[in-house]
Length: 396
Image 1: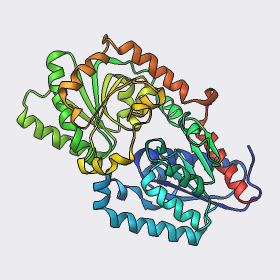
Image 2: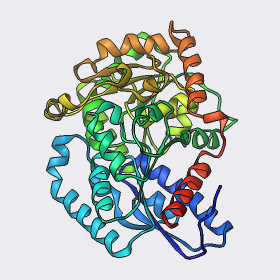
Image 3: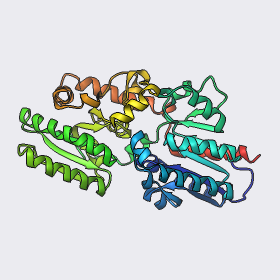
Image 4: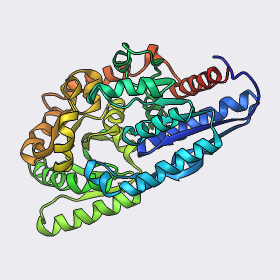
C-alpha cells in the first residue's frame, strides 16, 4: 500500500450524519491516525459527527445530532438547520482546503455537499455508497462527476458503477470485525428471549413501538415462556420507549414486562433467541451475530407519496440483509402491514423450532461470507489505506 508522497501534515475530513455512519467514522479515524503515526506523519482529522468520533480524536466541526431526522416531511421541518450547516461546512472547506473529504453514507445531505466540494476543487471520497440502486439512475452519473473514489461495503455495488469511470472498490463491511470484536464467548443464546429493536430515532420509535408491543402481548399469550427485552442506542431513545410503554400498559394491562436497556444491543444480538427490528443497519449486524429477525418499517405517508416515484426496491427487498443475500432471509413488513396479525406468525416461523429457523440460520452464515472479500480481515484498516492511497494520488 503506497504512502503519501511527502511528510507534510495532512488534513482529512470525515462527514457522518447518522448513528451508524458515526460509528464507522470513529473507527476509521482511529485507523487513519494509526497509519499516519507509523509513517511519522502529522494528520489532522476534522468533520461532522458525534461523541464517538470526538472520542476517536476527530475535531468536530458540526454535531451530527442536529440532523437526527428522517423522511422528507421531517427534513422539510428542519430545512433551515440543514442549510445553515451546509453553508458552514462548504465555507469552512473552502478556507481550510482539506486534502480530501470522506463522505460516509447520509446521501441526501452528502450528495449536495459532494457537488459543492467538487465545484470548489476539493477531492471527495465516498465511503458507503448511497443506495443509488434504489433511486433514479441519474444519481450514479452525479457521483461519477463529483467523486474521486467510491469505497463500497456490499459486493453487488461494484456492478452498479461498472458502466462509469468512477474508481469503485468493494472493501468489505466494517460490521464484520466490529461485531466479532465485541462478541462475548461467555454468552449463550437464550431461546426464550425476544429482543425488540424499534430504531435509533424518536420518529421511528413513535411509529413502530406500539405495534411491537401489541405483537409482544399476543405472542406472550401463545408462548408463555417468552421474555421481552428492548434495547435503545442512547438514553433519550430509551426514555421515549419507556414513556410509550407506560402509556400502552395503562390501556393494555396484559402487556408483558419489557426490560428497557441502553447500549445493550450487541449483547442481545448474541443472547436473544429471536428479534423484532426496525429496518436499518441493525439487520446486517444481527445477521452477522446470528440473530434471526422479523423486520418492520413505517415512514410518514406524505414522505412516502413524495418519494414513491423515485424509489424502487432493489432485488425486491427493503431490508439490507435480504438485498445482500438476494433472497428473503428476514421476513419484512412495511407501512400498514406492520400489525400484530402479520408479525406474530412471522415471528413464530423463526422462533427456535420454527419452520424457517434452520433456513434463516444458514442464510445468515452466507451473508457473512458475502460481506468479506476473500475472507479479508482488518476491513477498516484496509479502507483507511485506500483513503491514504487516494489522497496520495490527489497530491501528485
